[in-house]
Image 1 (cartoon, helix red, strand yellow):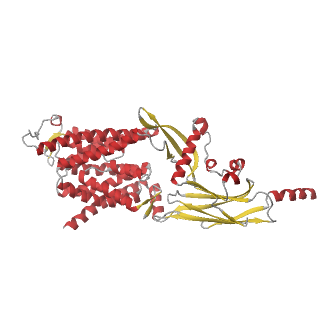
Image 2 (cartoon, rainbow over the protein chains, first blue to last red):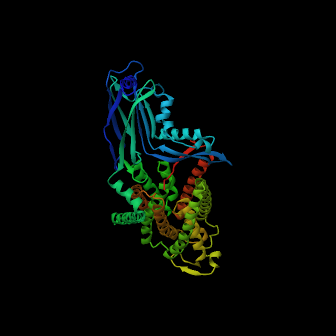
Image 3 (cartoon, rainbow over the protein chains, first blue to last red):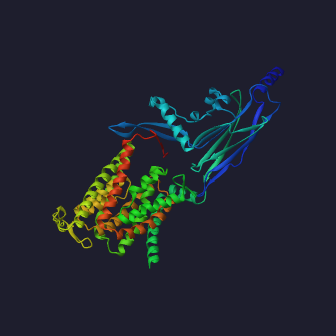
Length: 251
Length: 306
């Protein structure tokens, strides 16, 4: 018993000696008609039972990801002088939004093995199981997906965007764009030393449409016929109102 | 000022949408085309997902057509009987077209089909109209040439089931209008447009209707075709965005009224030349997209979960 305790005491400092505690400035985002994007502050501290160990410095990685959805990536090629879709690869799960913020360049703060285990970097966050068997050129489709989403601002890596003070307090801002999909956004915080993850924490941000947006979405999904006829009615009324209004103005 | 569109899940500038609606409405009121062939590519351009652009575009066309038709009603330039005959064919053609469309999209390559049919039909009709209107314009400006006979005996006079279309001043068989309506309805469903740009020349050149009546009658028929399409899209693919439609409509109905006034001041030949040039410009733009190497060879399509 005493021997086991001694072993545990020896192991413990190497692992669970530093833990992360964190909070978000908001855990709910309401999408209303005027929604223009939202900035979320992620802050936290490193809790220690003893002074931090010597050796590689403490680093923090923060990721925020939107709901994952399947996406079809198509590629064009020239056939008979026309540019047409020739190839297609279905990516099983790709987050609709993915942002990474780190204290230093990702290659320095995370090893390949740890990245593979925790799926932290952008290429790892995209799940494309069995794609390689389907198409020999699959990697170029995945890179295209990342390239297009990075260009639109849906994916992004900001190395050095997390500020860590006195090896204890950290904070980072994550900007959610205006073109946001509804769902639960997962926020993950990793503490690393020498490229190895020593602790992590997960939290969610609930992104929901509200007010008129919520009402319209529900109506369109649950009562599509009424929604369609209502759209039609609005169109007819607007057309009539404009005609009547202009006649009144001229009279 | 940005607005978040609930169904498209995209945030866009309100004034861009009002402006787009206004431009398309203006052309719609002036030429009697629904404007679907313009609004849909323009919506793609500002980043609205294609399925939503097609469905919402149809909804917008309903409003601008109602506004335009009311202006024509007061001038008594709508042939209701002809409109209903065309519509009967149109609904049948459109139902068939929606079936073909969904089968082709399941097989892939539906984008190519849409683009090719745009280039083919817009190009063909634009060229024919431009040629004919230029010839007509030359005839009116240069006196002494032989005027065209107004009562030529075409195929439409020889088929059975003749009906009197008083507003158009025609006594022809119902078979050609039903076939024209069906063809337009079919193409409209495939191309996601109202079909005015096909209907207007078909009425002038195939049925021999007077230009003034053609615009009002075409708009009358477009209201029902696009209304049908809107409800079909809303119930099958949930792709009508009411907020987007409303903004386009507000711009569109105002534009349509101004367009109808401007249209009255122009000569019929000039109107047709302008419409022909517009149709050709859209066809050329789509043809270039097919012929030139795109900057990004890859494209993303979200897979909709059932």
